[in-house]
Amino acid sequence: MALVSIIFVQVIRKGRTWHWSVLYRSMGSPKIEKIDHLKLVIIISVQVIRKGRTWHWSWSLDKGRTYWLVLYLYRSLEKAATGIEAHFIGPKEVQRLAPVLKTEDIEAALYVPSDGVVAPSDLASTYVRLAKDRGVKMFEGVQVEKILTHNGHVHAVQTSLGTINLRQIGKKSQPRVQVPLHATEHFYIVTKEVPGVDSTLPEILLDAILNRMPAVETAEVRQFVNGPESFTPDGSWILGESAEIGKYFVAAGMSSTGVVASGGVGKHIAEWIIDGEPSINLEAHDILRFVSFHNNRRFLRERVKESLGEEQWGIQKGTFGKPIWHEHVKNEYWSCKERVSLIDMSSFSKFEIMYSLHVYDTLMKAGKDYGIRNAGYYAMRKLRIEKFFAFWGQDLSTDDTPFECGRDFRVKLNKGDFIGRDALVKQKENGISQKFVQFLLKDFDTDNDVWPWGGEPIYRNGKFAGTVTSSAYGPTLEKMICLGFVRDYDENDNRIIHKNINQFIMDKDANYEVVVGGQRFQAEARLYTTKEAYTSSDPVFIPVPKK
Image (cartoon, rainbow, N blue to C red; front, top):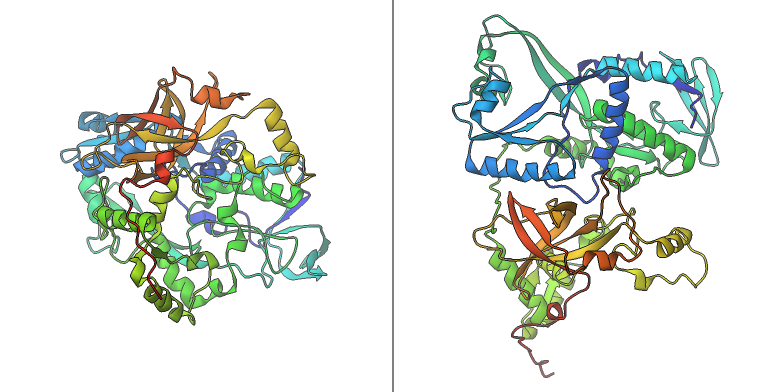
């Protein structure tokens, strides 16, 4: 992979890089998806950062002042099973690590020694140096005047230095390609070690900062930085080839993660340009997920506010245990299983249904004698998890094969060639390194225990073996059910390929545990849907009404 030249409309390090303040966190939200591609991209970036000596080791502390916050940190600590070093510490240890912090109201804290700080300008210089060492030519302050296309594809760029013929182009010029972005205010303060802080500073976190770090109250504000940062409607990046012009690639909408993720994003965009696709699944960030109406200026202004945060933060009251709506969803579940239910699936069409509202009324009227009622996605979630049905995007992705998720009966290798056939033939001959498994938690108290929500570690004989992808309570089985992939790792944390992975998973000596909120639950592993999931404990049959 060799780049010939890079054109900068601005001077290097003179864009938004100058006002970015970047912290690298190795542990994000505990609500992890099966494959955290974002983290993979960031890790690649950090490797580049360390080479350029722009990485500053420090550490991070997440403080818990209440029982619920401590429980939240416990859930975050579960990710340490994936190889991230993290420790739960008390107030005294917090005081030792950070003497400037007030610790009287802290119950506990999560300490992550692998976190650090990135110097954006130094990182940019590192990239420039590494690129030039490999023969890359860079031109700064170049004005892109026109993108020249032929048959709907880019073939040249007209610049202030002349016309450049090329095969592909990456976005830092401005043609008629619609990219739904909106600028937001990115601000922070820089202080001196002298008394005096403006108490009217419009910073929503200032009171909490002054409470946690009293020394800030006597520090003078040397500089208040407020610069623009672009966000997308859904908070995810915008990557890939545009729909309007072929061979025109976009990497934008970093949503405050641009510096830390820059190396990985650049690597995978380069793969996309040269190989036609990135080496990891980046569907969640593909520019093709947006259509023209997402570029409505008013929509972007209002929606991006919600991407960053709501007008009143913290107004929603969440739960770690049994949700208050559980019984309502349970009734919807039984309606689906024993009577008739109507579920609105119009969101799959990705456009608003406006002129067929009478269809709903007609269906509800026709189903009245059958005991019809409305049901939602949570009811459907219970039904599919209990029946061991995987959900695309949450349980499965393009990185998983039919053999790995128990769908090998759908693969006909003897019916001619198809995309991916060679890889599947190889898997069938050599074996696989993971298998999709259903777990029934034992001795789980739905009223008092913390509920799993995805991302919980799975252990096999005390050894980390995977994470939960989705979970739900199964009313028919009367068990808390978790779905997830089970893997076998060697001493170097590399996956082991098993010719007969079913035997490995269902070995009579295999003991499985799922950790939820710091508590280990024994779990029964299943590779197939149990017959009980297809039946009802007390079915209620409603006769067809007479005409």
